[in-house]
Each structure stands twice: as C-alpha cells, then as structure tokens.
Amino acid sequence: MTRILGIETSCDETAAAVIEDAGDAAKILSNVVLSQIEEHAAFGGVVPEIAARAHVEALDGVIEAALAEAGVTLDTVDAVAATAGPGLIGGLIVGLTTAKALAAAAGKPLIPINHLEGHALTARLTDGLEFPYLLLLVSGGHTQIVHVAGVDRYARWASTIDDALGEAFDKTAKLLGLPYPGGPSVEKAASTGNPRRFSFPRPLKGEARPDFSFSGLKTAVRRAATELSPLSDQDVADICASFQHAVTETLSDRVVRSLERFRSEHPDLDTPALVVAGGVAANQAIRAALEELCREHGFRLVAPPIKLCGDNAAMIAWAGMERLKAGLAEDDALSFAPRPRWPLDSSSAPLFGTGKRGAKA
Ligand code: KG4
Ligand code: ZN
Image (cartoon, rainbow, N blue to C red; front, side, top):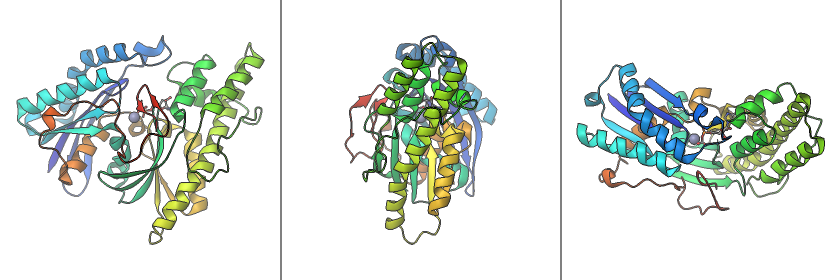
C-alpha cells in the first residue's frame, strides 16, 4: 500500500490531499481546497503578492486538515508531492519549501510535480484510464492538446497562439462587470441568454493547423459591449451566451484535427479516449459540445468530476503516485528549484509568448 501527501499552491487555491493506492484501485482519503476567491475578488483577478501571503497563512492548517481527514499522520505517508511549477513564483516557493521541510523532517522522499501533469493524469485516478489518450487541457493559463503516451511521455500537438481559454472567459467577465472568477459567472449568465443574438468570430475555423486562438473573440465581445453600452442584464446574458456558443463551436472545429491525427496514429484502438481537464472543463456547454464531437468521431469523452477539474492537491498527490510507481521520483529532489515556466512537453517551444501563470503555449 502506498500513501502520498500532495500540496498545491501554484495559483489561488491552497490545497492538500492524501491518496492511497492499495494495489488494485487508488482512493482519495482527503482533498482539502481553500479558495482565495474572496481575497482577490475586489481586484477582479489574482494578485500574486496577496496569493503568496494567503498561502503562507493557510498552508499549514490545510495540510493538517488533509492529514486529519484522511486519518493518517506524516509518519505513515510514503512521500510528499508538491507542485513545483508552472505558476506564480510566490505560491510555488511557499508550497515547495513547506513540502521540502516536511519531507526532510519525516525522512520521506519529496516528489516535485508539474501542475499540468496533475491535470493530465487525473483521469487515470478517476476512471482508471489506460495510456495512450488525447488530452484537451483548458485552464486559466493553458489551452493545449497533448498526446499522453505514458507518465512523463507527453507530446504537445496543439496550443493557443494568443489567449488561454480560461483567460478569455475571465476577460469577458471583467469587461461585462461580472464577478471573478469569470468562467462560472459567464456560464451562469449565458444560461438565460440568446446564443444567436451576436455572431462572434470562430478564430482559425477550418484551418488545417490544429492550434487555438481566442483573442479575436475577446475583441469582438468588447466591440459589441461598447456599442450597446449601457448594458441591460439581458444584453449581458446574450453576450455571454453568444460568446460561449462561439467557444464551443471553435473548440469542436479545432479539436477535430487532433482526433483525426490520434486515430491515424492509433488505428488499433477501437474507441480512443479524449480527456478534458483544467478549470474550464467544469463548463457544461463545453462538456456537451465535446461529448457530441466524440460521439461523431468514435471517441469517448472522459471528464473528471467538477471538483477535480479545477486546481486541487489530489491530482498532485496522484501524479506523485504515478511518478513513484514509474520509478521517476528524483533522488536530489530537495534541491529542486520552483519553475514559474515549465512546459509539460519540454521538446515543444512555446508558440507565443508567456502569460502571468507561465508559458501559455
Ligand atoms: O485549472 P484552473 O483551476 O487554474 C489554472 O491552472 O489556471 O483553471 C481556472 C480557470 C479560470 O480561468 C476560470 O475562469 C476557468 O478555469 N473556469 C471556467 C469555469 N470554471 C472555471 N471557465 C468556464 N466555465 C466554467 N464553469
Ligand atoms: Zn490548473
């Protein structure tokens, strides 16, 4: 039996979790997530310095709660896994340093984890998914399609050439005066809106390259909002619904390129899996569109439960478990420095610049 304590502090959630693997199936013994939403709400986005300070204040208590809820002590875990990047440097330092101290004091191995690997492997914890599969990772800082061949065997097939999808939701919300975090606000407003009132662009639609682009969509939303200003509640709802509709159509058009490539590279697989992960994967309209797309193309969609889509430490503990089992835990991990930028597929150069949470591409 193997038990891992996981720690996540790369953005605005302070999280700790304990995972246990008894050989046949893994269990989440505890999964504590303390969101900093209230601290950042007044600013309409994550303020790095406030986030770092909030992690310092909350992390010890969150770890204690995760151990207590799991009914274990530090002595009875086999390793400590912590997010070492990509993300906001202040938070990464807090989480990784705490993990190092705990690991050193308890004489346990430390496993530094790439946050994106946590999202990438979650479906194996929740659904026991086998390799290989295709991953659509959509979060506040990343939008990419990754071919997942095994633990540490990631090939990026597509990514955004400008904004991340979560960023497009967040900026749209801010522009319309909806509360942070933007994704859930836009989704809620969209539920009472008319998705056909505005015809927003579908960036890169029909192009052979498999990548994504969302900045044109954001600009079109801004133009519509400015023209109509002052906006009624119905205007806001209609803009959100039309935006979300454009997003789902764009995603379907873009993702299909990679489904076709996956199919041609794995003709032996009957019903290959497309996994959707990251905070934006909580969006029901996006899930429904991907479900439909998968049905049409003979894939099955695997979407982790909503609470494991957003940032959490269960996924970090699980990634630690996978690395430990694969013999990929590093010996000199205590000297591992946090990496604000850390692509999952180190062989793929970023397509375009970097964002505040790391390389966007
Ligand atoms: O994975 P995550 O929790 O943090 C990052 O690693 O970025 O993703 C956060 C992002 C934010 O941009 C948030 O607005 C978006 O996920 N998000 C959503 C929804 N819930 C969260 N976007 C669209 N619809 C949602 N329901
Ligand atoms: Zn994330």
